[in-house]
Image (cartoon, rainbow, N blue to C red; front, side):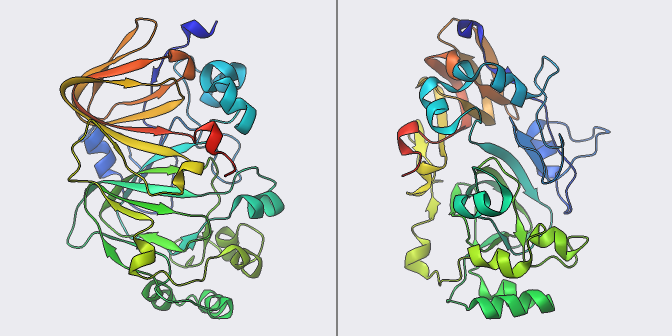
Length: 347
């Protein structure tokens, strides 16, 4: 019965990665000083496996089974009929806490059409970053080429593993908490050391890594078995000047409404994210599958059916559609991540 489907509080889920980081995740979750070994990514409410893996990356529900299987067993309750009609039994969303303890390599992700052709996947990998903290001397991100490049030039950089040329060709933007960056499929990018983000993405693990040396074990892990010449076909080699960057970068730190839409226009066809920031009040949540990440404070999540769940800094929750008209109250800051509204899918 869908009326008994309630939000679930999720533990950390940190599959092994090739780069350093994780202290910021441990601090947020309040587990510094524990004996646990923390990785740089926490896959929250994940129904997605790491590329080529059978189960690594999946979230386990409190019931002891994979959240993916919980959702498949009650798609209408978890996702709502209108979502299922457009996106099937997938949540359509992967949320990560990502703590870059070192600069990530220059890479990009496939579009839906490219992923369908080469990876037999309904989803490509458009993503977005919500910066929730920074540390170190110069936290920054690198979205898009500053000037148009030829695919031949990029192919040569890749063959030679010319990392200085790859990174130097990208825009370099300092960031602070409250900044957000929307990364359309195909856009080359990297995240710099000291940047801590909540990342939303389509539910796949397709990363095409141009700068593989010193990061990955082999070039095959960079092109995922399709070859770099093929991979580069889906790369956006156009130039992104300041005006164009302003269409994907937002600065939201100074906005103090109860709910702030965090992401740039165009992202709504792939996912939605807002910051709910309360000082003793309450905010209503329309029925929807959602992932909640509590950044600060304390409060309560109440469902339409009268259930109550405590919220505190570092908590992460998966909220099913069948929780109904829910409410967050307290003195609290929460990032709410959702799949696209059904009417936006395919636009």
